[in-house]
Image (tube, rainbow, N blue to C red):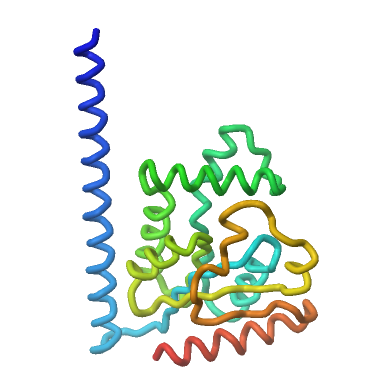
Length: 219
Protein backbone atom coordinates (compact mmCIF):
# COMPACT_ATOMS: atom_id res chain seq x y z
CA UNK A 1 0.00 0.00 0.00
CA UNK A 2 2.80 2.37 0.90
CA UNK A 3 4.64 1.68 -2.40
CA UNK A 4 1.44 2.27 -4.39
CA UNK A 5 1.03 5.66 -2.74
CA UNK A 6 4.62 6.55 -3.60
CA UNK A 7 4.12 5.50 -7.22
CA UNK A 8 0.99 7.59 -7.52
CA UNK A 9 2.76 10.60 -6.11
CA UNK A 10 5.66 10.24 -8.53
CA UNK A 11 3.23 9.83 -11.43
CA UNK A 12 1.30 12.93 -10.41
CA UNK A 13 4.46 15.02 -10.18
CA UNK A 14 5.60 13.72 -13.56
CA UNK A 15 2.26 14.63 -15.13
CA UNK A 16 2.39 18.10 -13.62
CA UNK A 17 5.91 18.64 -14.97
CA UNK A 18 4.84 17.43 -18.41
CA UNK A 19 1.82 19.74 -18.42
CA UNK A 20 3.94 22.69 -17.33
CA UNK A 21 6.55 21.95 -20.01
CA UNK A 22 3.80 21.72 -22.62
CA UNK A 23 2.48 25.17 -21.82
CA UNK A 24 5.95 26.68 -21.63
CA UNK A 25 6.43 25.53 -25.21
CA UNK A 26 3.01 26.91 -26.10
CA UNK A 27 3.96 30.31 -24.65
CA UNK A 28 7.14 30.25 -26.75
CA UNK A 29 5.04 29.41 -29.82
CA UNK A 30 2.76 32.40 -29.16
CA UNK A 31 5.77 34.72 -28.86
CA UNK A 32 7.23 33.42 -32.14
CA UNK A 33 3.86 33.99 -33.80
CA UNK A 34 3.87 37.54 -32.40
CA UNK A 35 7.30 38.14 -33.91
CA UNK A 36 6.31 36.95 -37.39
CA UNK A 37 3.03 38.83 -37.19
CA UNK A 38 5.02 42.01 -36.50
CA UNK A 39 7.28 41.27 -39.49
CA UNK A 40 4.26 40.92 -41.77
CA UNK A 41 2.94 44.23 -40.51
CA UNK A 42 6.31 45.91 -41.04
CA UNK A 43 7.28 44.51 -44.45
CA UNK A 44 3.97 44.44 -46.23
CA UNK A 45 1.14 42.16 -47.22
CA UNK A 46 -2.59 42.59 -46.70
CA UNK A 47 -2.97 44.88 -43.72
CA UNK A 48 -5.86 45.25 -41.33
CA UNK A 49 -4.96 47.68 -38.58
CA UNK A 50 -5.28 45.78 -35.34
CA UNK A 51 -4.92 46.72 -31.72
CA UNK A 52 -4.89 44.43 -28.70
CA UNK A 53 -6.01 46.28 -25.59
CA UNK A 54 -5.57 44.79 -22.14
CA UNK A 55 -8.35 46.60 -20.29
CA UNK A 56 -8.58 46.86 -16.52
CA UNK A 57 -10.41 48.71 -13.79
CA UNK A 58 -12.23 47.84 -10.60
CA UNK A 59 -15.76 46.44 -10.65
CA UNK A 60 -18.51 48.72 -11.91
CA UNK A 61 -16.39 51.42 -13.61
CA UNK A 62 -17.83 50.67 -17.07
CA UNK A 63 -15.21 48.54 -18.82
CA UNK A 64 -17.77 46.55 -20.81
CA UNK A 65 -19.70 49.73 -21.62
CA UNK A 66 -16.54 51.19 -23.16
CA UNK A 67 -16.02 47.99 -25.17
CA UNK A 68 -19.62 48.01 -26.39
CA UNK A 69 -19.28 51.64 -27.47
CA UNK A 70 -16.13 50.80 -29.45
CA UNK A 71 -17.97 47.91 -31.15
CA UNK A 72 -20.27 50.45 -32.81
CA UNK A 73 -17.29 51.76 -34.82
CA UNK A 74 -14.91 48.80 -35.24
CA UNK A 75 -15.06 45.03 -35.46
CA UNK A 76 -14.18 43.94 -31.96
CA UNK A 77 -13.63 40.83 -29.88
CA UNK A 78 -14.21 41.24 -26.13
CA UNK A 79 -12.80 38.53 -23.87
CA UNK A 80 -11.86 38.11 -20.23
CA UNK A 81 -9.33 35.93 -18.46
CA UNK A 82 -12.09 35.09 -15.97
CA UNK A 83 -14.36 33.52 -18.64
CA UNK A 84 -13.13 29.89 -18.33
CA UNK A 85 -13.29 30.22 -14.55
CA UNK A 86 -17.01 31.08 -14.56
CA UNK A 87 -18.00 27.56 -15.61
CA UNK A 88 -16.00 26.15 -12.71
CA UNK A 89 -17.62 28.66 -10.36
CA UNK A 90 -21.14 27.75 -11.52
CA UNK A 91 -20.37 24.07 -11.00
CA UNK A 92 -19.37 25.00 -7.44
CA UNK A 93 -22.73 26.71 -6.84
CA UNK A 94 -22.18 30.34 -7.89
CA UNK A 95 -25.48 31.84 -9.11
CA UNK A 96 -23.97 34.40 -11.45
CA UNK A 97 -24.58 37.39 -9.17
CA UNK A 98 -21.53 39.54 -8.41
CA UNK A 99 -21.39 40.51 -4.75
CA UNK A 100 -18.29 41.37 -2.70
CA UNK A 101 -18.24 37.75 -1.46
CA UNK A 102 -18.62 36.23 -4.94
CA UNK A 103 -16.01 38.60 -6.39
CA UNK A 104 -13.57 37.40 -3.73
CA UNK A 105 -14.48 33.78 -4.53
CA UNK A 106 -13.91 34.30 -8.28
CA UNK A 107 -10.61 36.07 -7.65
CA UNK A 108 -9.30 33.25 -5.46
CA UNK A 109 -10.62 30.56 -7.81
CA UNK A 110 -8.87 32.21 -10.75
CA UNK A 111 -5.59 32.27 -8.84
CA UNK A 112 -5.96 28.57 -8.01
CA UNK A 113 -6.67 27.65 -11.66
CA UNK A 114 -3.69 29.72 -12.81
CA UNK A 115 -1.41 27.88 -10.42
CA UNK A 116 -2.88 24.48 -11.28
CA UNK A 117 -2.85 24.48 -15.11
CA UNK A 118 -2.60 28.10 -16.35
CA UNK A 119 -6.18 27.98 -17.65
CA UNK A 120 -6.84 31.77 -17.85
CA UNK A 121 -3.61 32.50 -19.76
CA UNK A 122 -4.16 29.60 -22.16
CA UNK A 123 -7.68 30.82 -22.92
CA UNK A 124 -6.46 34.37 -23.63
CA UNK A 125 -3.64 33.27 -25.93
CA UNK A 126 -6.01 31.01 -27.89
CA UNK A 127 -8.36 33.97 -28.35
CA UNK A 128 -5.41 36.13 -29.44
CA UNK A 129 -4.54 33.69 -32.23
CA UNK A 130 -8.18 33.60 -33.39
CA UNK A 131 -8.24 37.42 -33.45
CA UNK A 132 -5.11 37.55 -35.61
CA UNK A 133 -6.69 35.20 -38.15
CA UNK A 134 -9.86 37.31 -38.32
CA UNK A 135 -10.71 40.67 -39.87
CA UNK A 136 -11.45 42.12 -36.42
CA UNK A 137 -9.66 45.34 -35.51
CA UNK A 138 -9.88 45.58 -31.73
CA UNK A 139 -9.32 42.83 -29.19
CA UNK A 140 -10.22 43.74 -25.61
CA UNK A 141 -8.67 41.43 -23.04
CA UNK A 142 -9.91 41.91 -19.49
CA UNK A 143 -7.13 41.00 -17.04
CA UNK A 144 -7.00 42.21 -13.45
CA UNK A 145 -3.75 41.02 -11.89
CA UNK A 146 -0.68 43.21 -12.71
CA UNK A 147 1.67 40.23 -13.09
CA UNK A 148 -0.75 38.54 -15.52
CA UNK A 149 -1.11 41.79 -17.51
CA UNK A 150 2.67 41.95 -17.92
CA UNK A 151 2.81 38.29 -18.91
CA UNK A 152 0.10 38.50 -21.57
CA UNK A 153 1.49 41.74 -22.97
CA UNK A 154 4.87 40.08 -23.37
CA UNK A 155 3.25 37.18 -25.24
CA UNK A 156 1.06 39.43 -27.43
CA UNK A 157 3.90 41.56 -28.76
CA UNK A 158 4.12 45.01 -30.27
CA UNK A 159 0.46 45.57 -31.16
CA UNK A 160 -0.60 45.25 -27.51
CA UNK A 161 -1.46 48.21 -25.28
CA UNK A 162 -2.77 48.54 -21.72
CA UNK A 163 -5.72 50.63 -20.57
CA UNK A 164 -7.11 51.50 -17.14
CA UNK A 165 -10.76 52.59 -16.95
CA UNK A 166 -11.64 54.72 -13.94
CA UNK A 167 -14.81 56.25 -12.56
CA UNK A 168 -13.53 58.46 -9.74
CA UNK A 169 -16.85 59.48 -8.12
CA UNK A 170 -18.08 55.88 -7.90
CA UNK A 171 -14.75 54.49 -6.68
CA UNK A 172 -14.35 57.13 -3.98
CA UNK A 173 -17.93 56.71 -2.71
CA UNK A 174 -17.80 52.91 -2.75
CA UNK A 175 -14.33 52.28 -1.37
CA UNK A 176 -12.47 48.97 -1.60
CA UNK A 177 -14.28 45.83 -2.75
CA UNK A 178 -12.28 43.49 -0.53
CA UNK A 179 -10.54 41.29 -3.09
CA UNK A 180 -7.08 41.38 -4.66
CA UNK A 181 -8.27 41.51 -8.28
CA UNK A 182 -10.43 44.62 -7.85
CA UNK A 183 -8.42 46.46 -5.24
CA UNK A 184 -5.03 45.94 -6.87
CA UNK A 185 -5.75 47.39 -10.33
CA UNK A 186 -3.58 50.46 -9.70
CA UNK A 187 -0.48 48.28 -9.30
CA UNK A 188 0.47 48.51 -12.99
CA UNK A 189 1.78 51.35 -15.16
CA UNK A 190 -0.80 51.55 -17.97
CA UNK A 191 -0.26 53.10 -21.39
CA UNK A 192 -3.44 55.15 -21.12
CA UNK A 193 -6.26 55.92 -18.72
CA UNK A 194 -9.88 56.36 -19.80
CA UNK A 195 -11.85 58.42 -17.28
CA UNK A 196 -15.49 57.35 -17.52
CA UNK A 197 -17.04 60.36 -15.83
CA UNK A 198 -19.33 61.92 -18.43
CA UNK A 199 -22.94 61.51 -19.52
CA UNK A 200 -23.82 58.13 -21.02
CA UNK A 201 -25.04 59.65 -24.29
CA UNK A 202 -21.66 61.37 -24.76
CA UNK A 203 -19.70 58.16 -24.28
CA UNK A 204 -19.76 56.85 -27.90
CA UNK A 205 -18.10 59.99 -29.30
CA UNK A 206 -15.54 60.00 -26.49
CA UNK A 207 -14.71 56.33 -27.06
CA UNK A 208 -14.47 56.83 -30.83
CA UNK A 209 -12.02 59.72 -30.50
CA UNK A 210 -9.95 57.81 -27.95
CA UNK A 211 -9.49 54.60 -29.94
CA UNK A 212 -9.28 56.29 -33.38
CA UNK A 213 -6.21 58.13 -32.10
CA UNK A 214 -4.74 54.91 -30.71
CA UNK A 215 -5.30 52.92 -33.92
CA UNK A 216 -3.83 55.77 -35.96
CA UNK A 217 -0.67 55.66 -33.87
CA UNK A 218 -0.21 51.90 -34.44
CA UNK A 219 0.32 52.38 -38.17
